[in-house]
Image (cartoon, rainbow, N blue to C red; front, side, top):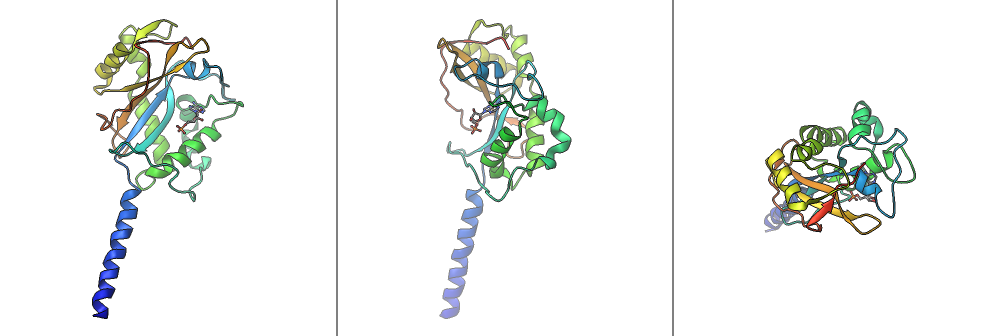
Length: 226
Ligand code: AMP
C-alpha cells in the first residue's frame, strides 16, 4: 500500500515538473521591426546611439516568444543575465540592424539587455544568448522591408499611404501577412511605427502568424523621412 502511494506521488511530481517545463515553452515568435524615424518623431524624441545615426532602414525591436492563446511569457530566467561578451562577434551587425534610439545616448547594451531579459530568456531552452541574437539578425537579413515597400512605391518621404497597401506590399514581398503598428507624431498624425511578422520556434523561418496582433492605425498613415 505504502509502495503504491509512493509511486502515485512520484507520478504526480513528474506531471508537475512536465507542466512547469511545458509552461516555459512558446509556440512562435513575433519578429518586430521598427521605423526609427517614427520612434524619434514623437513628443518624447530619441537619441542616436554613440555609434552614430542608424541606417535609413527598418531596424530590429525584438524577437518575442508568444503563445497561440495570445499570451506571452516574459522575464523567464532571472539567473541568466545579458552578457555582451557572448555576442562580441555579432557586434557590428547588432549596431547596424538592432540599434538603440533610447535616451540618454548609449551604445545599445541597455536595450539588448532589456530584450534578452524580458523576451530572450523565455526561449533559452531552444536558443542560447548567441543563437537568439543571431536568429534576429539573420531574419532581418532575409526580409528587406524598406526594399519591399519601395518596390510597391511606398517610400519614407513624409507622405501618407493606405495602411492596407502597406500590408499588401509586405504580404506580397514576404509571402506572409504582417501586422502594422502606428504611433503619433507631435501633431497627432498616425505614422508607420512597427511591422510584426511571425517566426517558427527555431527562430529561422517566417511563418503565417497563428495570432495576428491587433494594433491601431488610421486608414492612411505617414511614412516619415529619416
Ligand atoms: P519591449 O519591452 O520589448 O516591448 O520594449 C519596449 C521598450 O523598448 C520601451 O521602453 C521602448 O521605448 C524601448 N524601445 C523600443 N525600441 C527601441 C530602440 N530601437 N532602442 C531603444 N529602446 C527601444
